[in-house]
Length: 563
Image 1 (cartoon, rainbow, N blue to C red):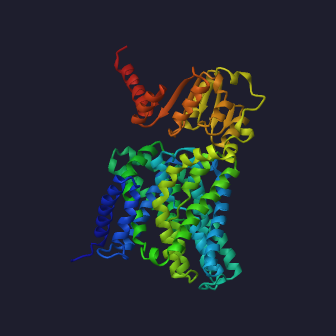
Image 2: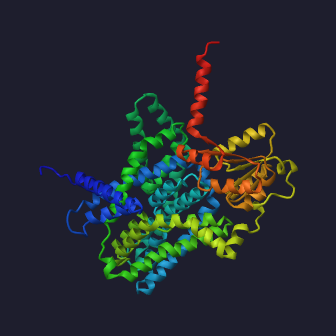
Image 3: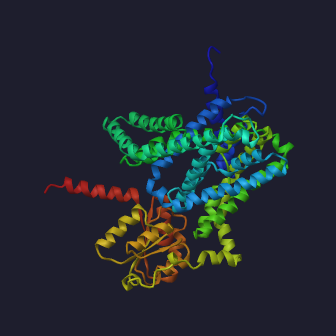
């Protein structure tokens, strides 16, 4: 050929084979991403036949990571991040320590050195943000409070791994690898410089970026060109991610996430999310294909027990540690199980870390194969753990006294204070969820002096509401105990204002069991889901697009009819 077409070959083979295998996986009721991973294995260097360019595939995958994290940032505000800081920061750090200890103990048992064991344990401790986000989006949990905890947890893990990647080369000699000649003074200098860079980046994005980028998006929108708008969104995601890595040493993923967060301040953030969605999906597929290309299937034959041990640390060890931590912060059992499923895999940072460890002579070559095998298996099975959370929670509550006690344990935020005004305990509105929709409803009720009680899963938010004099209880409203504490038996209306519709039927069923005459009002984003809810529950269901259309039509008619 007169010129290289490896880029075209890689994209064509990767997307084409991913489509075929993803379709077959979906037909036999397996997650489509299993097909994407197998497509990567088939076109990878460790299987016969066509071999795609692994370097190009990895770079395409990086673009997918940037676009995906940018999209998450568009839906994730600074307030959301701060709201979960009390559990995300200590939870992520303690979970990293526990998972590192488990992986390190495994490596020590195999006869590896202390430094190699430490790096290997760290590689098993950090979950894949891409896998987590795809799972939460497919289940409709990304905008839920549990989803925000999981995303915040992963952001803290990513920040911790940025520091690890910067500090590992200077520490390599101390840990038994290839020495960089760094002394204690230069090590502390490196740590201080890294923290300064990360802090400067976050400050720049939150102080300057929140004003500049929405303004740029507005100026581009004024041109009326859809192509320029799409180009602006994609350019912002990729350029800011690249600049953050080049100037501040922050990962591409973290840079793109903060870019999305500052873009969220623009009134066109929803349109930006929609315009970038097709590209995000296509490049996310290439991410899974690139992971499959790195995998050598022979490791399953030569080291099956070691692979099994690594998978157990990732899927079982990390999950149990995360569950215990979430429960220790007095969150519901369902939240603990969902967060555990979110973290039961490893991904991009693990590959980078183990690759760096091998290059610094800290890790043996076999470590890379074991980590990749653990990643492939844990990513492929991750959707299964999400589907098992609800049945597992039900089974635990049925067969375990401890699980029932965890669901109904005594907590001051889980019941209304004794001094609650009597007006809140009779003919009140029970408002489930205090997000953007819930706050607007609460403001209208307040303006008309109508009593209401808020049921919310964000414990910190419940504490704030009580400080502001608003009656609120903490917990999952699908749990009868939570609605009982909100005095649902005496309520006039139940309003379910949460974006998560998975437990809506359970909430309505519990409410009508305790109060057969109660009126129920529900929000929905999906037309088919809204129709089914209206049929199955006889609730009044408000669909966002329909209500917007009605309001606009009403205003148009008012303006069109002559006075």
